[in-house]
Image 1 (tube, rainbow, N blue to C red):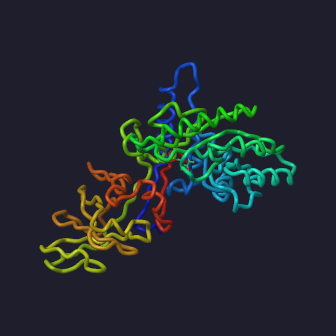
Image 2: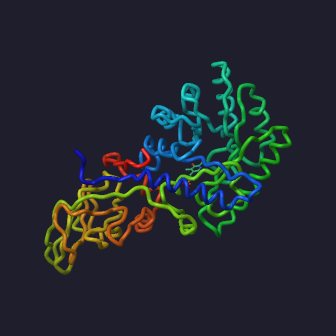
Length: 379
Ligand SMILES: *Cc1c(COP(=O)(O)O)cnc(C)c1O
């Protein structure tokens, strides 16, 4: 049994996006240099698309390194059959480090304490451990502060069981072309790398670019780039036109009832939609329990009968209402919440813009109750 609200995930589109990013990087890398490798970001259940099928499809498309948020996600990827390297972005202070060794995961070291814990865990097992070092250049979230590395790094670099595999940072404002912090962070990262060189440590690889940084600035490509959003077919706002991407997820449902509402009657909880003229309202079996934001009521749209129709009234837990006045619709007709119908299209960015959030949040919120259906291609 499949519920009528389904998220279709196009693995062929995902693989095409991966290749489009590869081609973009290759075309813009000077001939004498090697284009950066891609660390494909599949954290948070692959941005809501389903970590297992997405990770395996990316590996088949050629991704040699995947990244996830924490050790638990890394273990799930290994159990799903991922063979390549898996980088764990998150902090390790509250984690059981055993999984790093048992499942061959690459941790991020972002504090001196994490460095000591990793060294102790590796020594206790008689193992060596490769890690990526994270420098905080201005996001003020995770990482060694860029301005006192001379104090904090020597201990880490002396750890006998730890091998530095890469140094990285993360931008706070890559998707805002007018914000000066991006260039400041770029400069601080360059200074940090120079500082590390003065400590006599060789840095095998560097990375900094998420999707927006990848699109805006080849100078931050280094040896690896770390796209997430682009893989899923969404371009961060001002850079939208630079790459031919295909949205990977579409969200479809079916109308379960169609009703004539008289002038002055209310629709849904709180009677928030009380039209002054007679309207036709259709009910769609998807609500906030499926991850559709309550704020979509009165702001969002769906596609039905090949046209855009507004979401009206309060979004309920399991249902929402759409004003379909003038659109010939019947119960059973397809409704598109994200995706294409006829000549119309609603993207995660459109939905995000309607409710004042980001496409990241729209995708990640698509609930676990919604079944993900994958295309055969690429499996
Ligand atoms: C999530 C994440 C990314 C990917 O970001 P996108 O904007 O989706 O490309 C890259 N690096 C780090 C450290 C992240 O947490």
